[in-house]
Image (cartoon, rainbow, N blue to C red; front, side, top):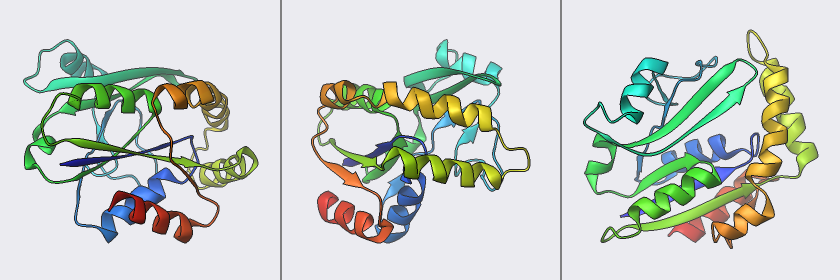
Length: 194
């Protein structure tokens, strides 16, 4: 089984690329769990598994049958938001899987599956110059009923730390995909993962 792991800074286009890839190739997708509020246009169980803080705590504390692979909490301007990857029914299919996350979550997924037979993890790191990302982030927030510009700025700044060159090197990511032209970027990724 291949785990194709898409990652990149906020507004790098990784969500769009993820959606295009799942339409172009026969692959399962992993839907992460989160306590953050749902945005306009997001779908429960498709964008994320949106769960309560209490339910998340039960997973993290081991009170649920499914095992937490990795979990991280961000102190946002709206309070803590937790994102978690859980070894649930989604991994039982034994079919190639498309995943989406951060370098931190990628490294934990890689460690978790490192000793598992027949699992190959392919990192797909998306990058975009900061000035383009910032414009994209503002445009996305403008589509929301209640734009969260302060949180957008916090996330933008944190990305510089989370996706530092040091962390990219530590994660052993050698291949990068620049997303200036979406179609070209997707074509290069499809070529890489085949």
